[in-house]
Image (cartoon, rainbow, N blue to C red; front, side, top):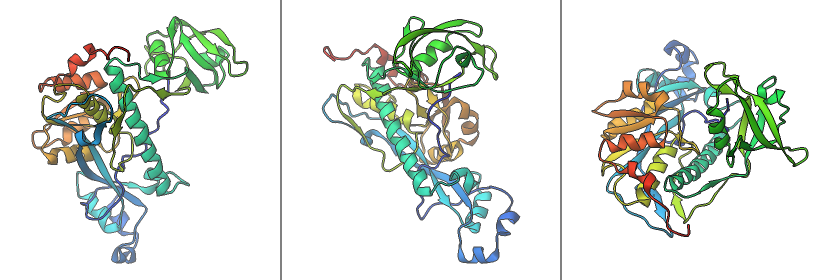
Length: 369
Protein backbone atom coordinates (compact mmCIF):
# COMPACT_ATOMS: atom_id res chain seq x y z
CA UNK A 1 0.00 0.00 0.00
CA UNK A 2 2.72 2.44 0.99
CA UNK A 3 6.45 2.54 0.43
CA UNK A 4 8.75 3.65 3.22
CA UNK A 5 10.91 6.70 2.65
CA UNK A 6 14.06 5.00 3.87
CA UNK A 7 16.06 2.92 1.42
CA UNK A 8 18.79 1.21 3.47
CA UNK A 9 22.13 0.60 1.80
CA UNK A 10 23.83 -2.81 1.96
CA UNK A 11 25.08 -3.84 5.37
CA UNK A 12 28.36 -2.01 5.74
CA UNK A 13 28.36 -0.14 9.00
CA UNK A 14 32.01 0.05 9.99
CA UNK A 15 34.51 1.82 7.79
CA UNK A 16 37.27 -0.43 6.41
CA UNK A 17 40.37 -0.89 8.54
CA UNK A 18 43.31 -3.24 9.02
CA UNK A 19 43.49 -6.37 11.07
CA UNK A 20 40.11 -7.93 10.28
CA UNK A 21 39.34 -11.53 9.46
CA UNK A 22 38.81 -13.22 6.09
CA UNK A 23 35.80 -13.22 3.76
CA UNK A 24 33.41 -15.28 1.58
CA UNK A 25 32.01 -15.90 -1.87
CA UNK A 26 30.88 -13.80 -4.81
CA UNK A 27 31.47 -16.16 -7.68
CA UNK A 28 34.00 -18.84 -8.44
CA UNK A 29 37.58 -18.98 -7.24
CA UNK A 30 38.66 -19.41 -10.83
CA UNK A 31 36.85 -16.25 -11.85
CA UNK A 32 38.53 -14.23 -9.13
CA UNK A 33 42.00 -15.62 -9.66
CA UNK A 34 41.49 -15.06 -13.39
CA UNK A 35 41.65 -11.33 -12.74
CA UNK A 36 45.40 -11.72 -13.06
CA UNK A 37 48.45 -13.04 -11.29
CA UNK A 38 49.93 -9.56 -11.22
CA UNK A 39 47.00 -8.25 -9.22
CA UNK A 40 47.34 -11.15 -6.80
CA UNK A 41 51.06 -10.65 -6.42
CA UNK A 42 50.81 -6.97 -5.64
CA UNK A 43 47.65 -7.16 -3.57
CA UNK A 44 45.72 -4.89 -5.90
CA UNK A 45 42.10 -4.29 -5.06
CA UNK A 46 39.47 -5.80 -7.31
CA UNK A 47 35.86 -4.63 -7.80
CA UNK A 48 34.51 -6.73 -4.94
CA UNK A 49 33.63 -5.95 -1.34
CA UNK A 50 33.56 -8.32 1.62
CA UNK A 51 31.07 -8.19 4.47
CA UNK A 52 32.46 -9.82 7.63
CA UNK A 53 31.38 -10.07 11.29
CA UNK A 54 31.96 -6.80 13.10
CA UNK A 55 31.65 -5.65 16.69
CA UNK A 56 29.11 -6.15 19.46
CA UNK A 57 28.87 -2.85 21.34
CA UNK A 58 26.98 -2.48 24.62
CA UNK A 59 24.94 0.71 24.47
CA UNK A 60 24.46 1.85 28.13
CA UNK A 61 27.57 4.02 27.97
CA UNK A 62 26.34 5.51 24.67
CA UNK A 63 23.11 6.88 26.18
CA UNK A 64 23.46 9.96 28.39
CA UNK A 65 20.56 11.83 29.98
CA UNK A 66 21.45 15.52 30.23
CA UNK A 67 18.68 17.09 32.28
CA UNK A 68 16.19 14.39 33.26
CA UNK A 69 15.87 11.24 35.36
CA UNK A 70 18.12 8.30 34.54
CA UNK A 71 18.79 4.88 35.98
CA UNK A 72 21.99 2.95 35.27
CA UNK A 73 20.94 -0.57 34.28
CA UNK A 74 22.80 -3.68 35.35
CA UNK A 75 22.09 -5.36 32.04
CA UNK A 76 22.76 -4.06 28.56
CA UNK A 77 21.45 -4.06 25.02
CA UNK A 78 24.22 -4.37 22.45
CA UNK A 79 24.11 -3.14 18.88
CA UNK A 80 25.90 -5.20 16.25
CA UNK A 81 27.98 -4.03 13.32
CA UNK A 82 29.46 -5.62 10.23
CA UNK A 83 32.83 -4.88 8.71
CA UNK A 84 32.96 -3.92 5.05
CA UNK A 85 36.18 -3.90 3.03
CA UNK A 86 37.36 -3.55 -0.57
CA UNK A 87 39.25 -6.79 -1.22
CA UNK A 88 42.20 -8.24 -3.05
CA UNK A 89 41.88 -11.54 -4.96
CA UNK A 90 43.47 -13.34 -2.00
CA UNK A 91 40.97 -11.79 0.43
CA UNK A 92 38.10 -12.78 -1.83
CA UNK A 93 39.26 -16.40 -2.02
CA UNK A 94 39.58 -16.51 1.78
CA UNK A 95 36.07 -15.16 1.98
CA UNK A 96 34.78 -17.80 -0.41
CA UNK A 97 35.95 -20.39 2.13
CA UNK A 98 34.46 -18.70 5.20
CA UNK A 99 30.77 -19.38 5.94
CA UNK A 100 30.49 -16.21 8.06
CA UNK A 101 31.53 -13.86 5.25
CA UNK A 102 29.92 -12.72 2.00
CA UNK A 103 31.62 -11.09 -0.97
CA UNK A 104 29.68 -8.84 -3.35
CA UNK A 105 30.44 -7.12 -6.60
CA UNK A 106 31.34 -3.49 -6.02
CA UNK A 107 28.26 -2.26 -7.89
CA UNK A 108 26.07 -4.05 -5.32
CA UNK A 109 27.69 -2.05 -2.51
CA UNK A 110 28.59 1.24 -4.17
CA UNK A 111 25.82 2.53 -6.47
CA UNK A 112 26.88 3.75 -9.93
CA UNK A 113 28.29 7.28 -10.04
CA UNK A 114 28.66 7.24 -6.24
CA UNK A 115 31.93 7.37 -4.31
CA UNK A 116 32.67 5.38 -1.13
CA UNK A 117 32.78 8.69 0.75
CA UNK A 118 29.27 9.51 -0.45
CA UNK A 119 28.05 6.10 0.70
CA UNK A 120 29.67 6.60 4.09
CA UNK A 121 28.09 10.04 4.41
CA UNK A 122 24.68 8.59 3.56
CA UNK A 123 25.14 5.82 6.12
CA UNK A 124 26.10 8.31 8.84
CA UNK A 125 23.02 10.38 8.03
CA UNK A 126 20.84 7.27 8.30
CA UNK A 127 22.37 6.59 11.71
CA UNK A 128 21.58 10.15 12.85
CA UNK A 129 17.98 9.76 11.69
CA UNK A 130 17.76 6.35 13.34
CA UNK A 131 18.92 7.71 16.70
CA UNK A 132 16.36 10.50 16.62
CA UNK A 133 13.61 8.02 15.73
CA UNK A 134 14.73 5.73 18.55
CA UNK A 135 14.42 8.57 21.06
CA UNK A 136 11.01 9.53 19.68
CA UNK A 137 9.68 5.97 19.86
CA UNK A 138 11.04 5.51 23.39
CA UNK A 139 9.44 8.71 24.66
CA UNK A 140 6.16 7.86 22.93
CA UNK A 141 6.23 4.48 24.72
CA UNK A 142 6.53 6.34 28.00
CA UNK A 143 3.44 8.43 27.26
CA UNK A 144 4.91 11.60 25.80
CA UNK A 145 3.68 13.21 22.56
CA UNK A 146 7.19 13.21 21.14
CA UNK A 147 6.77 12.64 17.38
CA UNK A 148 4.99 15.35 15.43
CA UNK A 149 4.32 16.48 11.89
CA UNK A 150 1.92 18.45 9.73
CA UNK A 151 0.39 15.50 7.89
CA UNK A 152 1.18 12.84 5.28
CA UNK A 153 2.48 14.37 2.07
CA UNK A 154 2.07 12.50 -1.22
CA UNK A 155 5.58 11.93 -2.55
CA UNK A 156 4.55 9.62 -5.40
CA UNK A 157 1.29 8.41 -6.92
CA UNK A 158 1.00 5.19 -8.91
CA UNK A 159 -0.59 5.81 -12.29
CA UNK A 160 -4.05 4.27 -12.54
CA UNK A 161 -4.23 3.62 -8.78
CA UNK A 162 -7.18 4.60 -6.55
CA UNK A 163 -5.30 7.75 -5.52
CA UNK A 164 -4.74 8.70 -9.16
CA UNK A 165 -8.38 8.08 -10.08
CA UNK A 166 -9.49 10.18 -7.09
CA UNK A 167 -7.57 13.16 -8.46
CA UNK A 168 -4.86 13.31 -5.82
CA UNK A 169 -1.64 15.07 -6.84
CA UNK A 170 1.98 14.83 -5.72
CA UNK A 171 2.48 17.40 -2.97
CA UNK A 172 -1.09 17.16 -1.65
CA UNK A 173 -1.28 16.68 2.11
CA UNK A 174 -3.49 14.13 3.90
CA UNK A 175 -4.49 15.51 7.30
CA UNK A 176 -7.19 12.94 8.15
CA UNK A 177 -8.38 9.50 7.08
CA UNK A 178 -12.09 9.43 7.87
CA UNK A 179 -12.37 10.73 11.46
CA UNK A 180 -8.75 9.86 12.26
CA UNK A 181 -6.38 12.84 12.28
CA UNK A 182 -3.00 12.40 10.57
CA UNK A 183 0.11 14.06 12.01
CA UNK A 184 2.75 11.75 10.57
CA UNK A 185 2.60 9.43 7.59
CA UNK A 186 2.45 6.35 9.84
CA UNK A 187 -0.94 7.57 11.08
CA UNK A 188 -2.25 7.37 7.53
CA UNK A 189 -0.64 3.97 6.98
CA UNK A 190 -2.42 2.50 9.99
CA UNK A 191 -5.74 4.16 9.26
CA UNK A 192 -5.73 2.94 5.66
CA UNK A 193 -4.42 -0.48 6.67
CA UNK A 194 -7.46 -1.04 8.88
CA UNK A 195 -9.70 -0.92 5.78
CA UNK A 196 -10.39 -3.65 3.24
CA UNK A 197 -10.09 -3.72 -0.55
CA UNK A 198 -13.27 -2.27 -2.02
CA UNK A 199 -13.89 0.06 0.92
CA UNK A 200 -14.56 3.71 0.15
CA UNK A 201 -12.37 5.93 2.27
CA UNK A 202 -12.78 9.67 2.80
CA UNK A 203 -9.57 11.65 3.01
CA UNK A 204 -9.15 15.22 4.21
CA UNK A 205 -6.61 16.64 1.79
CA UNK A 206 -4.93 20.03 1.65
CA UNK A 207 -4.26 20.82 -2.00
CA UNK A 208 -0.72 21.78 -2.91
CA UNK A 209 -2.10 23.98 -5.69
CA UNK A 210 -4.56 26.01 -3.63
CA UNK A 211 -3.61 25.39 0.00
CA UNK A 212 -7.27 24.70 0.72
CA UNK A 213 -8.62 21.56 2.43
CA UNK A 214 -11.15 19.35 0.67
CA UNK A 215 -12.78 15.96 1.08
CA UNK A 216 -11.67 13.26 -1.35
CA UNK A 217 -13.26 9.81 -1.66
CA UNK A 218 -11.28 6.86 -2.98
CA UNK A 219 -12.22 3.21 -3.46
CA UNK A 220 -9.33 1.08 -2.21
CA UNK A 221 -7.96 -1.63 -4.46
CA UNK A 222 -6.14 -4.83 -3.42
CA UNK A 223 -2.39 -5.20 -3.17
CA UNK A 224 -0.89 -7.38 -5.89
CA UNK A 225 1.06 -9.59 -3.47
CA UNK A 226 -1.77 -9.94 -0.93
CA UNK A 227 -5.34 -9.55 -2.16
CA UNK A 228 -6.63 -9.19 1.41
CA UNK A 229 -4.75 -5.93 1.97
CA UNK A 230 -5.90 -2.52 0.70
CA UNK A 231 -4.05 -0.37 -1.81
CA UNK A 232 -4.30 3.40 -2.21
CA UNK A 233 -1.28 3.60 -4.52
CA UNK A 234 0.86 6.30 -2.96
CA UNK A 235 4.24 6.87 -1.36
CA UNK A 236 3.87 9.03 1.74
CA UNK A 237 6.27 11.09 3.80
CA UNK A 238 5.71 13.19 6.88
CA UNK A 239 5.60 16.91 6.21
CA UNK A 240 7.70 18.91 8.66
CA UNK A 241 8.57 15.90 10.82
CA UNK A 242 9.92 17.07 14.14
CA UNK A 243 10.44 15.76 17.65
CA UNK A 244 9.45 17.26 20.99
CA UNK A 245 11.44 15.58 23.75
CA UNK A 246 10.72 16.41 27.40
CA UNK A 247 14.43 16.53 28.19
CA UNK A 248 17.75 16.14 26.45
CA UNK A 249 19.20 12.67 25.85
CA UNK A 250 22.46 12.23 23.97
CA UNK A 251 23.00 9.04 21.98
CA UNK A 252 26.52 8.35 20.71
CA UNK A 253 27.19 6.08 17.75
CA UNK A 254 31.00 5.78 17.55
CA UNK A 255 31.09 6.74 13.84
CA UNK A 256 28.96 3.72 12.95
CA UNK A 257 26.68 4.24 9.97
CA UNK A 258 23.39 2.82 8.80
CA UNK A 259 19.94 2.50 10.40
CA UNK A 260 20.14 -1.02 11.83
CA UNK A 261 20.87 -0.05 15.46
CA UNK A 262 17.45 1.59 15.83
CA UNK A 263 15.87 -1.19 17.89
CA UNK A 264 18.92 -1.55 20.15
CA UNK A 265 18.99 2.19 20.86
CA UNK A 266 15.25 2.32 21.56
CA UNK A 267 15.50 -0.50 24.09
CA UNK A 268 18.56 0.98 25.79
CA UNK A 269 17.00 4.45 26.01
CA UNK A 270 13.96 2.89 27.69
CA UNK A 271 16.22 1.02 30.12
CA UNK A 272 18.16 4.16 31.04
CA UNK A 273 15.04 6.34 31.41
CA UNK A 274 13.13 3.95 33.68
CA UNK A 275 13.78 2.11 36.96
CA UNK A 276 14.20 -1.65 36.84
CA UNK A 277 15.72 -3.78 34.13
CA UNK A 278 14.40 -4.00 30.56
CA UNK A 279 16.75 -6.94 29.99
CA UNK A 280 16.27 -8.61 33.37
CA UNK A 281 19.82 -7.56 34.19
CA UNK A 282 21.26 -9.62 31.34
CA UNK A 283 23.45 -8.78 28.37
CA UNK A 284 21.39 -9.12 25.17
CA UNK A 285 21.82 -7.98 21.58
CA UNK A 286 19.36 -6.53 19.09
CA UNK A 287 19.36 -5.47 15.46
CA UNK A 288 16.74 -3.91 13.20
CA UNK A 289 15.60 -0.50 12.08
CA UNK A 290 13.00 1.31 14.17
CA UNK A 291 10.13 3.08 12.43
CA UNK A 292 8.12 5.91 13.94
CA UNK A 293 5.31 3.53 14.92
CA UNK A 294 7.72 1.18 16.70
CA UNK A 295 7.80 -1.39 13.91
CA UNK A 296 11.12 -3.13 13.31
CA UNK A 297 12.54 -3.32 9.80
CA UNK A 298 14.99 -5.71 8.20
CA UNK A 299 18.68 -4.98 7.91
CA UNK A 300 21.63 -6.31 5.97
CA UNK A 301 24.41 -8.60 7.13
CA UNK A 302 22.30 -10.77 9.45
CA UNK A 303 24.63 -13.75 8.95
CA UNK A 304 27.66 -11.71 9.97
CA UNK A 305 25.85 -10.08 12.89
CA UNK A 306 24.68 -13.45 14.20
CA UNK A 307 28.25 -14.76 14.01
CA UNK A 308 29.49 -11.72 15.95
CA UNK A 309 26.85 -12.11 18.67
CA UNK A 310 27.53 -15.85 18.95
CA UNK A 311 31.25 -15.19 19.42
CA UNK A 312 30.55 -12.53 22.06
CA UNK A 313 28.91 -15.12 24.33
CA UNK A 314 25.54 -13.32 24.42
CA UNK A 315 22.60 -15.70 24.84
CA UNK A 316 19.65 -13.69 23.42
CA UNK A 317 19.55 -11.91 20.06
CA UNK A 318 16.47 -9.99 18.84
CA UNK A 319 16.19 -9.82 15.05
CA UNK A 320 13.63 -8.68 12.45
CA UNK A 321 11.15 -11.47 11.80
CA UNK A 322 11.96 -11.66 8.10
CA UNK A 323 15.58 -12.52 8.91
CA UNK A 324 14.87 -14.91 11.77
CA UNK A 325 15.35 -18.19 9.90
CA UNK A 326 18.69 -17.08 8.49
CA UNK A 327 19.90 -15.86 11.88
CA UNK A 328 18.72 -19.01 13.64
CA UNK A 329 20.57 -21.19 11.12
CA UNK A 330 23.85 -19.41 11.88
CA UNK A 331 23.48 -19.12 15.68
CA UNK A 332 26.11 -20.93 17.74
CA UNK A 333 27.31 -21.29 21.33
CA UNK A 334 23.80 -21.55 22.79
CA UNK A 335 22.58 -18.28 21.26
CA UNK A 336 18.79 -17.94 21.33
CA UNK A 337 17.40 -15.92 18.43
CA UNK A 338 13.98 -14.28 18.78
CA UNK A 339 12.02 -12.73 15.87
CA UNK A 340 10.27 -9.39 16.41
CA UNK A 341 7.92 -7.27 14.33
CA UNK A 342 7.87 -4.25 16.63
CA UNK A 343 8.99 -2.78 19.93
CA UNK A 344 6.27 -4.56 21.90
CA UNK A 345 7.45 -7.91 20.52
CA UNK A 346 10.96 -7.07 21.71
CA UNK A 347 9.71 -6.18 25.19
CA UNK A 348 7.75 -9.44 25.34
CA UNK A 349 10.84 -11.42 24.36
CA UNK A 350 12.90 -9.65 27.04
CA UNK A 351 10.17 -10.36 29.61
CA UNK A 352 10.94 -14.07 29.21
CA UNK A 353 14.36 -13.44 30.77
CA UNK A 354 13.01 -11.23 33.56
CA UNK A 355 12.70 -7.88 31.81
CA UNK A 356 10.12 -5.38 33.09
CA UNK A 357 9.29 -3.78 29.73
CA UNK A 358 5.68 -4.98 29.61
CA UNK A 359 4.85 -2.50 32.39
CA UNK A 360 6.23 0.51 30.54
CA UNK A 361 3.00 1.28 28.73
CA UNK A 362 1.42 2.00 32.10
CA UNK A 363 3.96 4.67 32.99
CA UNK A 364 2.68 8.23 32.73
CA UNK A 365 4.74 11.33 32.05
CA UNK A 366 5.21 13.78 34.90
CA UNK A 367 2.47 16.37 35.34
CA UNK A 368 2.95 19.39 33.14
CA UNK A 369 4.87 17.48 30.46
